Amino acid sequence: MPARLTRPDGPVPTPGIVHLGLGAFFRAFGAVWVQEAMETAGGDWGIVGVSLQSPTTRDLLKPQGCVYTALELGPQGSTPRLVTSVVDVLAAPEDPEAVLARMADPATKIVSLTVTEKGYCHDPATGRLNLDHPDIQHDLTYPLPRSAPGYLVRALQRRQAAGLPPFTVLTCDNLPRNGAVVRGVVVDLARRIDPALANWIAVEGRFPATMVDRIVPATKPEDLATVADLTGTADRAPVLHEPFRQWVIEDDFVPGTRPPLDRVGVQMVTDVTAFEHMKLRMLNGTHSSLAYLGNLAGYETIADTVADSAFAAFARHLWRNEIIPALTPPPGESLTAYAAVLLKRYENPAIRHRTWQIAMDGSQKLPQRILGTWSENNAAGRVSPGLTLAIAAWMVWVGGTDLNGRQIEVKDPLAPRLRALSDLGQTNADKVAAFLGVTEIFDPALAADLRDPVTAAYATLKSRGARAAVQEVAR
Ligand code: CS2
Image 1: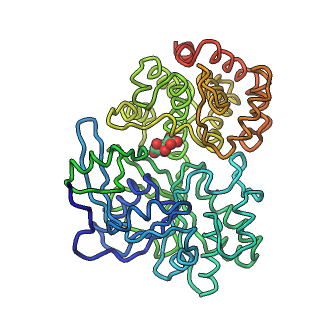
Image 2: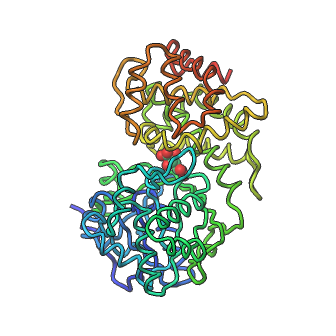
Image 3: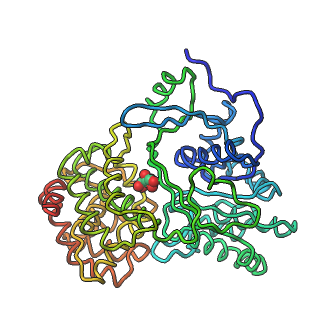
């Protein structure tokens, strides 16, 4: 029996960061980078993680002193590293007061977030706060919040009342203009609670935009034994990740709150937009396309999907013919080289990243990953048959039945509504038209242009299957 993992002796970092949404991605990404920054340049940047939903992560991490293994999975072998930068974990639903107190503590300089696209309680098509969201309704009425925007507003309210400066809000989710979106929802919610607070946040608050990138599949039960074999200790909450990582941050922090991340390879820039478009469209856009089409073709992981030469050719087609033509390369990046690296990352057989995992929450992901490129191509007179097929594949997938008549477990905040739309439609054209009427996802003008090509792609998928359909596009 391997020994239980415990925190090694020695000083524990003093907290300076509160992180909302302590999932596998942040633990394999931001927490590792913050640890390296403290090792290189010092400073009090210990992380207090907050689970906004279930206490599971807290229950796994606390008994082992909040440390855990980050296992890097290279094509040639694995390298474990002990992550010690997380110093405490709070479960928000059990004790919202403790979370607010920690966020309002004078030592807290940063509140970072990985709460997934849906955690911002915004409307994906417009980026604005969704006032009908049940958690936002709750947070407008009660001082102990439920939503991420609610925690940010109530904690900033306490800081303002105490005469403290705000913390910097560092969003690390794959949203377009993520800094502006989180700023927008926070200021909007604050305005409805206290206009003077909203003005203070708008003037003093800082919400730098970021681009984050590392592939981190969900930890599976069998991974615990792999980690125990490699490290000789029993870790109940390891994370697994690829070697690649890139973090680009807009250099716009509340004075005195910027961690020394630039010392360890994080790119601090004045404008993240070109990096964000490159990453969301080239990586996440093809990830989602391969996830729906690969899943419908019966592939369990992205690596399995691109091991099929038809799908690898489809990915290359998307980059070369549909995505790169609509992009401006960020300073220092070659988009063709970036695409070649992406295919290698997808091929890494050690990363078992499930197509099902990437397919979930598509209603929140489609606009920034696929629809923006489609609409820019359309405006420039370029066709996007591969992206059109991906949109049709999403529609089949959220319809809840795969091309062989098997049930799909659809996870999406709009799942019941999408399922009902699909079931009500009699013909392919009806179903496609019904999906395109969901204005949270599809802008009406764009929907009108999508209608005919998506209906044709949907029919092809249904009659010929996913593999033949991608082959037809990438011929
Ligand atoms: C993936 C991302 O699950 C998904 O939707 O596309 O989590 C992806 O792995 C990361 O953005 C990579 O940086």
